[in-house]
Length: 221
Image (cartoon, rainbow, N blue to C red; front, side, top):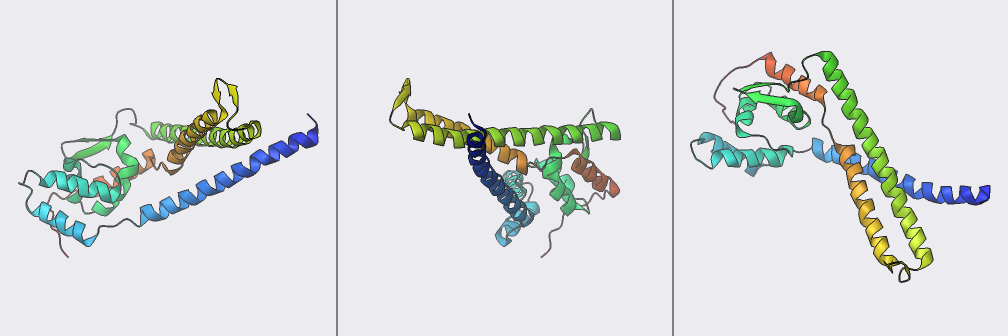
């Protein structure tokens, strides 16, 4: 293959890839904007207030869990939610919980790091490892998914979608390639918006340890 022809093919592959990368960046930006703007609605606050006023009701704990899950987009067990609600810095604790919970252990109204992260060095190593793995997963899945999508469209369109090249019609192979590409791109998107961080877990614990005041939760408007 001559060099100009090769460069032309490479350019055709890079252009769609750049468009996909730009689209992913836009999606990431929109995700952050929407994620930072989540607040309780008035009806949710009223329902939560009613549940907190009557915790003896068997359905109250479930309702509280579902309301918090809908607000913070992560399941928070009732006992952990109560421990955070009774804390003066409850807003910061709830805000950090989603990116921290994988590294947190809860026992007896107390939070601590999971076993194996007992030193700053181990915390740093885990943070670097998670970031590295997530970055590799993003770039590899995004690249393979994007290239497979572009090549499959060009290749099978050239051969003819209703021609038989291998066992069955080309359109069947095209659909299979598209599904694999979508799966890989969904992995890339999931890696891109993953906010999990052991550093946030340490911040969570720092806030939680600052001042623990066991008191009844009072909701005021």
